[in-house]
Image (tube, rainbow, N blue to C red; front, side, top):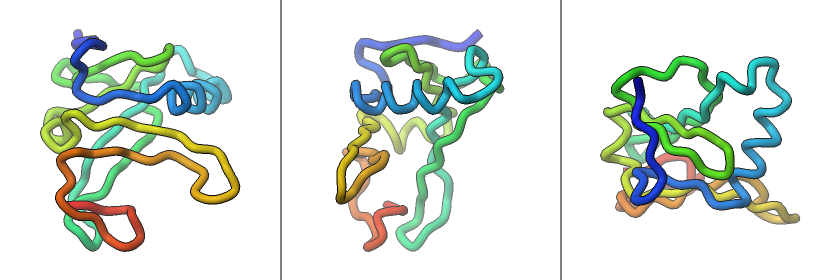
Length: 116
């Protein structure tokens, strides 16, 4: 079984991000079984990239938190890179979309898609 946390969670979602993810998840056939997987992978011009996708496979070593009805899973290798971070969603004419606020990122590339 996986761990579900909220207070003092490893990673959080703003209300706007949770609402948008919930809307996107509702369009999936098996939405009740899915979590939002947030991960860090090697790559990009700064060393690491973020990855987000819906996932039905939650492992016992994943950390899972819930925000606004959305379960978020983070694998053990990604956890140190995401600790204290959050996902936000902004809707507007400029800069619409998801953005990760990561206090562990020391620098990011010009395109904003990778960090170190």
